[in-house]
Length: 149
Image 1: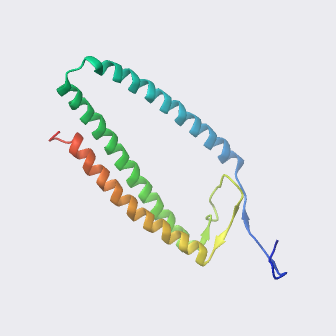
Image 2: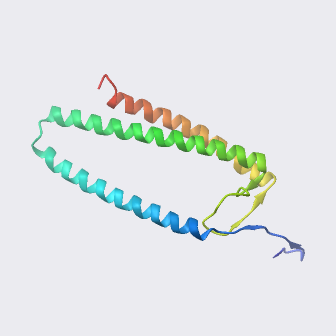
């Protein structure tokens, strides 16, 4: 129960946290840190190897690396856009956030009705922006990594 300034009491629904999801998140984030550190070591070694490389070859290699990275960014943005659009639609259908069957990291106050609908619409708008950014990153990646590179 939550006390309101006027003295009324209001029921606040709480979506309880899932401890297994917390452990899984910690494991995945730790693995991500390890992969990022390994990538940094690889980039450092690659940079050392480029010190004696002819400029034309260095530019060609950089084009491939930047193009591949931008293509990866485009795929990630488009996947995130699809997820945001799907989640926004599900929130609008259920008019509840977090969704009834979802797992959360922390105890979360449930938003329902118009509050949830506004969140769902915001996610749909964000998905449109992510699609535009994903297409732009894909075009940039194609420019560097495509057949004309």
